[in-house]
Amino acid sequence: MEKRREERIKKRIPVRFYFEGQGFLSFTGDLSRRGVFIQAPNPCPAGKGINIEFETRGEKIQLAGYIIWSKTDLDQPWLLFPGGMGVQLLNYQKQEYQTLVGAQQ
Image (tube, rainbow, N blue to C red; front, side):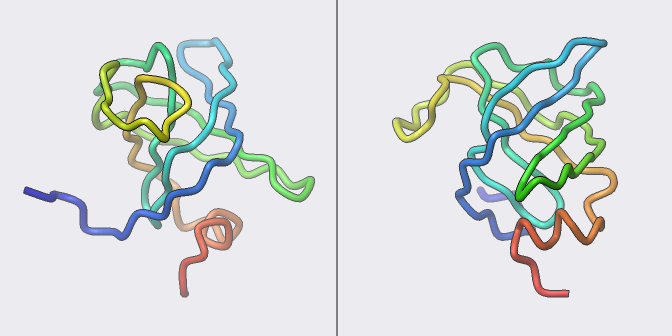
């Protein structure tokens, strides 16, 4: 049963995320208006906060989020890493992020 309320758009974008004082570089798997799937070989645990930074066209987009789920055994061959995490964004309404997603305002 599908729980998502928002349409997901497959987009592979470089992303830097920060968890417990450490920075990691990875890629997105998909985006929605309110969340992002981040590919990661060692995803962070669910239930924790995370900070995310995209850099597109020379502009940095900084967002805060909450890790909803985390898996290390995803059966999706198009992904770069065999794991990842679903992140609900807390400040998703930033215009720069909504433009990146291509959302209609």
